Every structure is written in C-alpha cells, then in structure tokens.
Length: 192
Image (cartoon, rainbow, N blue to C red):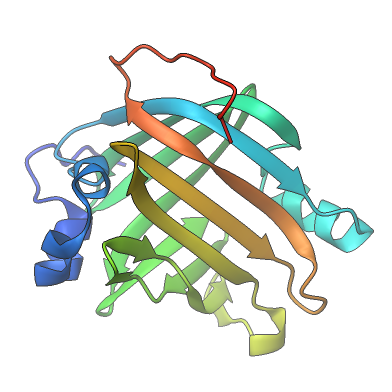
C-alpha cells in the first residue's frame, strides 16, 4: 500500500457535516493527514465459549486484561486508513476505506460495511453487511458490533463490544482511552 499523506482525512470526508458534531477529542483522533499515533490504557474482556474464543483468535483480538497499554497508529494509504492496534504484545490490523458510498473495514479476507454515524457527539460503528473475499455473508453469519468513540475527561475514549455470529456470545469487549503519543501515560486507579 502506498501512503496518502496529502489526502483529506477519510472520516471527515465520509461524515461531512456530521464530523463537526463530534466531540473535539474524537475529531482530533480521526484527523489523519499523515501517520497518527495514539497511546493509552484499556480493559479487555474475552468471551468464554469455544466458538467465541476461536473467532477472537482468528481476528487476533487481544487477550483479557484488567489494565493493558494500548497503542494505535492510523496511516493514510490507498484512499483509506491502515490501522494498527497494539494491546500489550498483541497486535491486530485493519484497513478502513469508503467503498460504494459506505465505510468498510477489512480484516484479512473479511470486509465489513459499517453504519458509521454520529449521535450526541459520539461516533458509532455498527456492522451492516460483510463478505469473505467477494462472497457476501448471510445475516446469520454476521458479527454484531456495539462500538462507540466519545470524549470524557478531555480524552478520546473507545468502547468496542463484538458479539459472535450465530450465538450472539461475547467475542471481545475492549474499552479505554487514548491520547496523542507524545503525552506521558500515567496508570491510575480509575483506568478502565
């Protein structure tokens, strides 16, 4: 993939006027004009069923942790954004891009269409459709995403809960906060 450092931020272009309704920390966290690195802390809960654990492993979601360091880097590439997330030593990546008028997120051979929207200053990421390569996934094989980004205590916060297809059981739930990488991180008793 080639860098797009001069391109307009993908989320601002896609959301249009809705982007301006986001809280400041969320807008700043998506002002990706070149590589944008953020770090913070998170809590991760994993599902316990064999099916949920298998799917979470397939997508390389982070293991359970009460308090773990998080680093996220978003890099403009090929008209979209390449996201690298690190929870402690666990790394997983995705590529977000507008395709056919919708925001999509690709994890390896899987591409999901997101119903990205703004409400009450928060950004929501429901999964609307998906495919494996070129093959559309039927609704019963779709994961459910209960994901939002918001501002609290002048920080960018995320709360992402992913439920397994077929069973609706928890795959992973990660929540926490991020700041630009050059801000010192202090673990505190209130860390999620």
